Structure formats: C-alpha cells, structure tokens
Image (tube, rainbow, N blue to C red; front, side):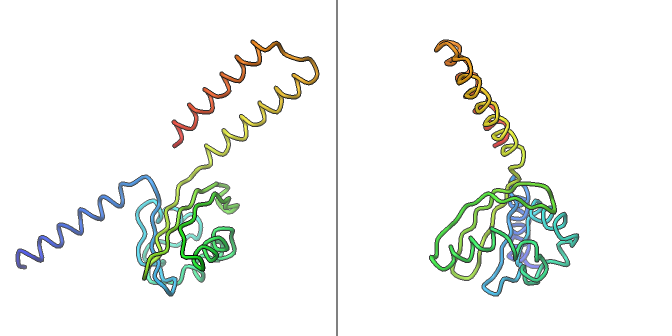
Length: 169
C-alpha cells in the first residue's frame, strides 16, 4: 500500500470519527433518494423506526424502506422546500417512537443532507411551562395577584424555561 492510499484511509477514518461524534443524526441521500450515508445517531434513529440496520438501509430508497418517513410532515415539507431550493427546519412527532424530532434539511446539487435531533424532552418541558402559565393566568383572573407576586412568578418561569432550554439544547 502506498503512502497516498494510507493517508487517504487515515483521512476517511478521521472524517467518520468526526461525523459519528456530532450530537445530531446525519443522513445523506442522492437525487434518487438512495441512502448514501448514516452517522451513528441517524443509524440508531432508523433502526428504532424501521428495525433495519445500516447494512439494510444503505443504497436503498428512503421512501421504500421507511414508509413511516414517506408519509410524514417531514416528507411533505421537504418536497416543498426542494421545489423552492431552500433549506428547511421543522419539528415533527413520530408516533412509532413516541418521540419528537427537530429536522434540518438542505438540498445540494446532487445530494440532500438531513440533520436530526431528539427534542422530546424540550417539547415536554415547554408544554409543562405553558400549562403552568395558563394556570397562573386563570388563577390571576379568579383572584388577581399583586404585581410583585406576578412579577416574581414570571421571573421564575422565565429562569426555569431558559435553564431547561440550555440543559436540553
């Protein structure tokens, strides 16, 4: 094996290590929707969703091997974004996993890159905080709170919200 080949293999290992270490799922498809690449996090997502391993997904059409994805908000939004040649971001719920995911996708010339992040905990905390705010608002309507108490509650609410966002993000 010559020096250039060894260097290229070393470079490939470094790139793979970097892509597998990012805290997002990353998968790439070509113009025919064939899955070209899955990093470790994306592999886990698809294995949980479809029961198929990386070896059974690579080279396959994403819409055929993942009908759950084909018939989703993600699919509809991505096709619209593709028509406009724009990047899109959305949050979507996958009932089969009982999880929320943030998805960022950007079309490129010959490939499409998708980034996934499990945002279930963040969505849960935001819902809980909204519920508390609604309860406070209702309580204030029934028996108005003093401005100082209300300000203190809102400050605590904002701190908790920011703290949870920083922890989950």
